Length: 130
Image (tube, rainbow, N blue to C red; front, side, top):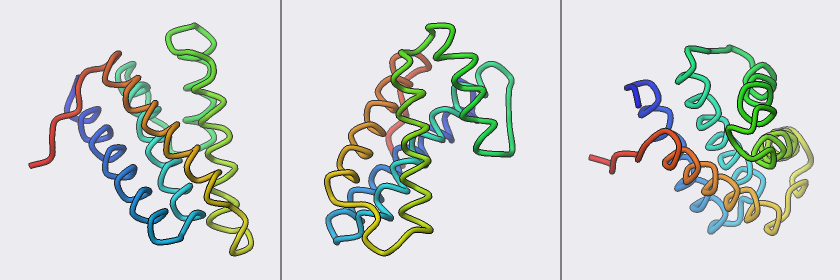
């Protein structure tokens, strides 16, 4: 694992912590958005390991699907989680106040945790916070 990947995986872990806090304080839309960002950072870490970097979310999602899910390097469900996470992030950030419910936010946090666990198996362990 290189330093950029480590930083991205630390950001993913921090985003999950923030998502949990937001959900505990009755902000499911924002919690779902933070969970999406955790998954997004993990996808970026996978791509970084292949020397790829993109500036648009859509490009990261597409490249993750093409280079990791479609090739079988990661289960295809993770690409689906990333796509669905982005859709909920859009709803949570830009939709009506109650566009994302508590159950949806919980699912997104669980998926984000699974993303980090996958990265730790395939890329390497995330260092504990200082």
